[in-house]
Length: 590
Image (cartoon, rainbow, N blue to C red; front, side, top):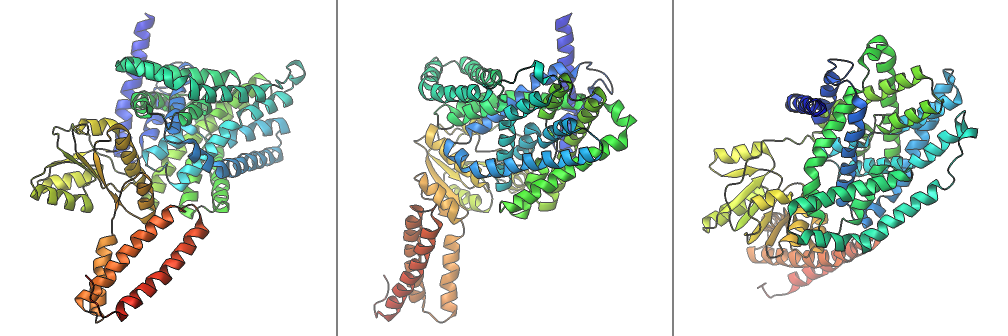
């Protein structure tokens, strides 16, 4: 009977997701809002198809853990170190300012300072799941605003132990429950143990598991790894998501990172969707209906205040307005960790039951607002990323062209004229449809994914042409192919000088998108000003050689702004002197 009940509930969850998410995606409202609304409808306060959302919420929280592990896999320790300024500065100030402001307002309305402190601590938290899922869905996690949002979320996870210590100190029963003075040393000890194990024990064990050649065993080990780390950090009071993120970072340079990502990604997506459904089920519709002005009004007020704080801090930390707004929208809601804080406060008699119910309703409503704000943000700044249907790739050629826009099309046409067919992949469904109208067999998909490259026959290919617009995806693709299929040659398009630096650091010689066409325009401009065809060609030839040499020189000091400025200025003078000597010489250029 219990198994029947479990299967029936599973069917309800899956049916709700399958019906709601495609509808909301089609309406342009995003998958997160679809999951949340589906949860509200099937939850105990609406259709009551699922009576107890708490059990599934605790289980589905593991989706957030897997999400942070995968994010960690994409970040090497050096990149995490680069986030230290937004982590401590942005994250620290966001938490402190939000707590202070909420406490002030709550105390002005007559709340005790203890209740005000609990409310401030909970409201200062943002939803890791909603924030990161929304950024990933919009392909904005790698943007400055996305990275800043991620740093703030990390700091909030680091605030777990201090907040719990604070609750223990201010609780009425504090004298009966001693504060664990060893909480911080124990947490640091577990983190140190994870770091040491990842460098000494974990990789040899992973090698042994991988040598079995059994995909299901490697998948089982992947889940065992994540669950083990999560339980270890939870045992010392740390956030499970924070611990697994650390584990992901430590494995970011591992040769097994791609298999880990490929195995965990589908489970993460399913559990994360289940988590959003569970959050939706926790929305007390009856309380919202009884006090709509209070619940909805306070939720919207909190969202606006958090957006103002985050936007102001973003500008203070030199983010562009668009990026600061992205961070403000992404983190404007109150997070799932607020449920935990308020639950602990209720158990410690810091919160009366009616206040607890009201705060939980406000948290849930605030979560519903963020997906709508993300839609508005996408439309305002024209950064919406369309999606389309996935189609199985039914051909295997020696050449794969990733990105079949204006650049990829020219390469493809030349290769076809040469008698060399290519497998064409593009992630813009409109572009795929347009190409098919003109007779090109183009497949929809994200070529930076290992499974799609394998499906396209990368292990048999001789050449990969990278011509995608997403710089981060292009670099990920290049690193993946170099690591897994080193025999495949890579021709990459660089959209900017910075992109060219990144590709050169990988040992590639990228083609700068507008460089050669700009040189031709410069040659014609010189001829229009009276230079002969040979003289104009000579000047352009010298400039091309000089610019390539300067690119190599600045690559060595790319992180030293002053050195780059000095090289650039010296280069201008050297080029001017060179061209003056060329004009004074009676010899024609070769």
